[in-house]
Length: 160
Image (cartoon, rainbow, N blue to C red; front, top):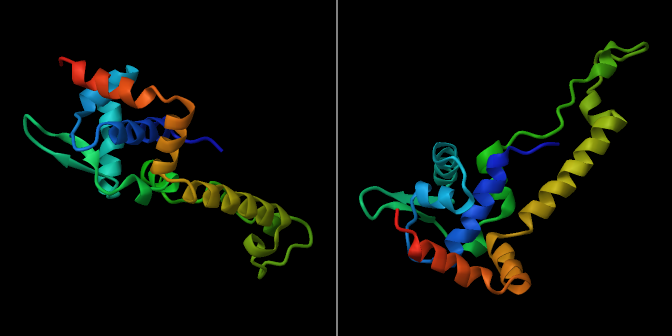
């Protein structure tokens, strides 16, 4: 399974927005933090906005901020906003083309390959749903205590 690189960018942007609460930040400033292409990051941020994860404000003091508390935004919310809700594994029921196949069978439910892949995806989705942006922020602050201050200072000193 391969996620869109926008998932990584979106997750980091959400975490960074937690370090500068109460401020809106433009896509250009968020992109500059990691030297990302602004237009592409902006698409990811807009997707987060459509999903109700971020809110945006227009105008000279405009930008993006979290639309709800980081405790109420899961990693799965962000992944789904960027990559969509579709399942990673799509059973096409190739067993129906095999010798001795039962054309009336629903192999999506009885195929051992399909069942294994669905079980793995359920585990993956549960893990992502069980981790919030607040959890990530807490882990970052515990592992790298200087990050929050450094991030705030970087954005405060950015002139463009």
